[in-house]
Length: 283
Image (tube, rainbow, N blue to C red):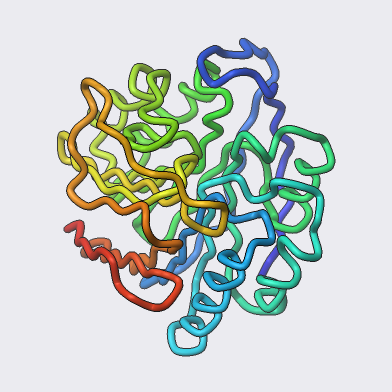
């Protein structure tokens, strides 16, 4: 696990429905990683529950047979400052491995300066927005606590315009969801048109404590917020939200992605090892 501190990103912790309008904003680029790559994705896990430990144990077992290139989070990494029980006990085994930590920022992560420091110091986040290339596959982390920030939007456009292969975007608040929080209208208005225009292949979100997979205009959207926090029941889909292809509110889980120049293979695995979804995105 390499902890990287590259550049400072200055973003205000404003509501996702608005924008800070901050004049000072920057983004980082994490050193490139190779293909093929195996990635684990979890979200909404950082609360030291029994379920978090069960998911962590399952991922640890997976890592014994499948080398993990990266450990990606969809946010809400810390619901409190309890670093020992939230991170070190369940995931301390990642220390000393070659697995890259790529964390996105949930609403609970920015509630205090101490939690922000934990995301930076222990999960290695170089800032609120950054990108990393896995060979020809581009992964972009955005800060959905600040959807209205025009500088972030312009940076997103420049990153997508420079992508010549597959692209993945990761952030906390779901573009589409039939869960407790539901679809994030600010994301739909500001970012979804860009995903469609520039042919983003996969969008990974958290926030709702369930699993959902959607497809719209060629873009696959996955909500994976079952990393440990208490699950919440699914609801009727909001108007304008597509019906999920697969959804469940019964399993704490994680997603395993295998990236290659030819495509993205995805598996969603429950804490007990049961596969609850599988999908393929061609390159």
